Length: 295
Image 1 (cartoon, rainbow, N blue to C red):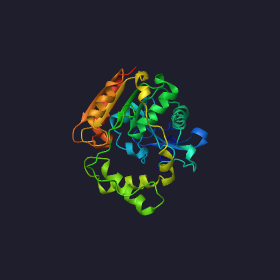
Image 2 (tube, rainbow, N blue to C red; image 1 turned 135 degrees about the vertical axis):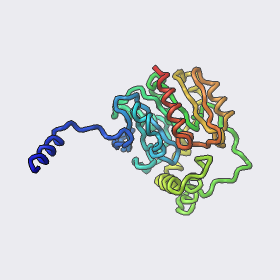
Image 3 (cartoon, helix red, strand yellow; image 1 turned 180 degrees about the vertical axis):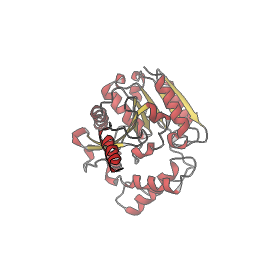
């Protein structure tokens, strides 16, 4: 018996290492623009078509934790924490955030470091703006396609603010814990049409509070108008949006899609600002189908 155990242990040591589960992310640290460290998560099939997920303002890569299952078996999935967000570094100067070329350089650095060529890019909310910053600098040929989730990415003018909706709780741009915590609680609740679970709400609040008020103030100066880019955005674009998303209403999505040469949209009824989280199974299927249609 001892000899058998020793033999089995030896075989285990000599056997080739198996890849980790496709649904278990591994972390990388990538030097972004001006060597700002960016934390990147990667999971899925390393031989599959790369899909880069870019999260929204105040959140992080963990927003895409439900992009698992079949999509991870067939695609290489990459999600970063943007500078100033989540686990990535947080430079303490305004000029580290208010130039869109900086954000474009971060995306280019991540893709180069991970050797992920011509990905399908999925941009959620503000992440759509970051995606367009990258395409503006690199060119439409640098990506296979673009999915804008809960985002029109500045391709059309924003609607006037609703006068009937209550103001957000707290002010996350002031150096005041009370206001920051109130704002984090509000954001945790309004990202979806249905209330998040207690665990989900806690995770969102923690992620939101990892972003300092100074960074929020600095980002207020970032250019978000991409209307000039619309005629030149020749790659295929898919809008996936929630029918109950008050911040990106369906008519705004229709107007943005109409401005692009190769765009279409899918609406999820009774879904809010986070279709990838509220209807992950459908979202994953729609993204996989879109990826298969691309060259």
